[in-house]
Image (cartoon, rainbow, N blue to C red):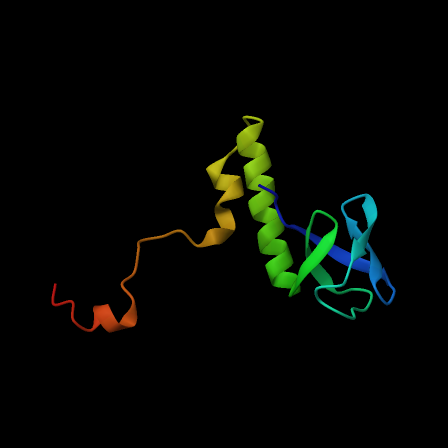
Length: 102
């Protein structure tokens, strides 16, 4: 299994881009997604970009990966790692809520 890592384009070329994740910069293959520009976010698997991301998607994936890392090293804290998920009382989808008579 491999994990997709959100990376930001620093310098773009025709078939490769220099992308940053934290302090790491690496060359990423763009064959599957095409042209990008500096500042774009990509989901990168094993050195190849598979999908363009919005900044919000990149943040969400980064937060999920940070929570996974914290769980693996024993420092997971739900108040920190789940804070932005809006976990509250579960809500019925609209088509079922209309049928709920309780």
